[in-house]
Length: 135
Image (tube, rainbow, N blue to C red; front, side):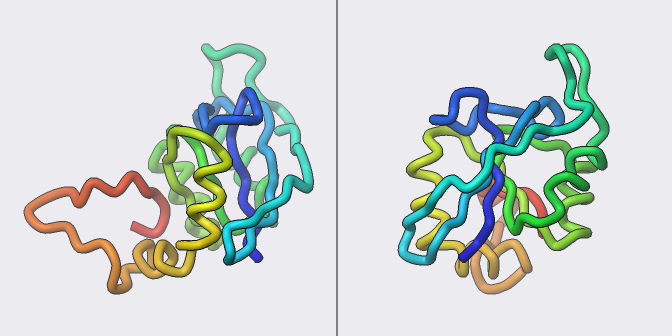
């Protein structure tokens, strides 16, 4: 089981930037791709409007008990702060259902890739992966 935090404004799609998220939905994700929502966690000191963002550390501290963060966008500082705590971050756009199911079934492969294992090997530039964190 993996704890995954998802940045969403509608509960259906991953559509929120890490630094602008007012809340995260936390899911328990199993290796067979099944998952369950177990908490909606408001972010203390979250921005009140889209023009302001809060510090990455504010959010990172509040997500210290999760294994993975799925967001539509994340900056390098926030991704690095998560990675230093052992939390993987991935930029994903689309439906929460599809993303969680896929992550549950593939998380061991993705964990190897983000740790520099045998997965993604870019040749002559980017491999096209949209993951952040351990890379």
